[in-house]
Length: 527
Ligand code: G4P
Image 1 (cartoon, helix red, strand yellow):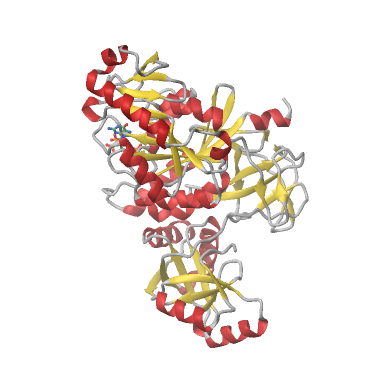
Image 2 (cartoon, helix red, strand yellow; image 1 turned 90 degrees about the vertical axis):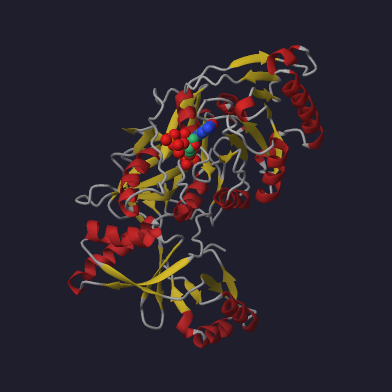
């Protein structure tokens, strides 16, 4: 098979949702269709249950699961589909943002009763920034929920995207009868078997005025469906491939993941419309998947579960060419050649050593500390892939060494955990004190626990009153010098040595911006 054919065969996407909307259930159904798993319940949820007795023990357990579910590949209708897992827990939002740099499209799952929830809003915002094509799956139609039209309005308003329904529900909750597939003009009847793999009944209905619709759905629901579909087709724009690919319009499907209902309809549409591996922007130039030379970037690093072996798995997205086992590649940041004897691919929970991988694929590379998130591998060209920024953390604490005998271990542990992207570390210019910045409070516990268990180091935290970390730049060196001098107490450096202004409050940030109009303050490290 030629490289073009291999690329055309691949679809790499992520499923995003607020916790509990049904991401894990949907993933599992998709894998069942692809035959990648045989039984329901095979995909473990990687969410952190609120009821967990100890949050960080739970995280440890989840880390084991999430190595296995980081990438799940399956074959369907002669295509190779890669699902990249995204943590739902908001404290791990940054992990999810980074994973979204490695996908070519996303499916957003929304709970019909809860509508658009905060985590969905955040994640879709990131997708929109990158113009990632989005398909929406409205889940749990077997339960009472919001009215379809109301929900679509809410999606358009809160997520700021245009939608077009490609299926429409007939009834809901107790009265849920099925969905009408507008794309294929078929009515799919819902039978609540209570079984996971219920075969649904599909009936070709080209014209909704057919009287047998009343026999199938009952008079009231049949009438409602006719009315609503008529309104839908008038109100919403017709689906076009171009608008979807440009991220301008999102098709919407309705269903019930747990009942495996409406999932196949969405999957069949997904395989037709979802984009194949797309070009990636590097600082130097755009990289096309069809280029003969291999390139790729690391978007996620996972520490191994065994504390005795401190090796990690770096997840590499292939951007162009063919990645081959035991072949020398350039590690661009370290300017050194590396080869990999055990690159791993993931078929659901099975790991296999692979000989080659193509654009769109993700391979796991065993790593003893060489990689950082964002690193690129190439056949020799110096390329830095864009789109893996750090975002300003939300919570900050000073971190101190609690055991002077273990200073080295602490430094090494912190270094590696930061490379993994667990949190961000800033070093104050004035006194070299280290500040840890995270998205959620949970990471502070994770860091403390892992430093102790994996590196034998111990740390303490001290509160620090900070609002945001802003990356700064200024074209005028004189102004920059004055700024750095005047705000000496608030200046720090990030892991790459970039200058950061640590703002104590929104008010201070505003005042400083007014006083130094020539200095630019950025909320992300990539600008
Ligand atoms: P997540 O990964 O997005 O966090 O969600 P997950 O799939 O774990 O689903 C969250 C809960 O919603 C689960 O129930 C799941 O069974 C349920 N669910 C998923 N799809 C549907 C659906 O179509 N209809 C209904 N009624 N429920 C659905 P749980 O009680 O939290 O977990 P479990 O004990 O069933 O695993």
